[in-house]
Length: 161
Image (cartoon, rainbow, N blue to C red; front, side):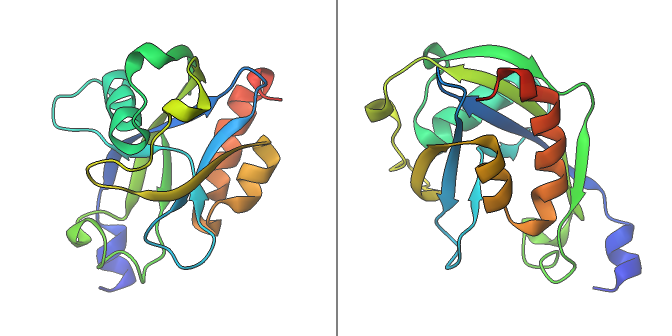
């Protein structure tokens, strides 16, 4: 695809969840489909007609086996945030239909115990997870998502360790 073709593509509607524990540490997980370090927070697409807040809760359950009863909502980003994926990835992900993602981010407090988080889901996306300082999460994210993560962390800074 040419840069012009990619620029004409829309953004994929998506949600992201910054899940924090009682100490204000951020949940981060290593992507299962990456040979190199590629840690991220839970995120995923919004189904047609789906409410973003409900999509965020669904993604937590699908990706890390955390049901809605184990989280408490704290905040959400004021605006939709966007990022572009590198041009080399566009034809390989989402069927080449999107240039990147348009995301609404939600901050939620984890109310459960660590042993209730389970990455062995029906369609596993992660191979490992840990609680980390926000700055460590920012350093661990793939470079093309770093700006959006920095914006999310700035908006939610008051709740973080």
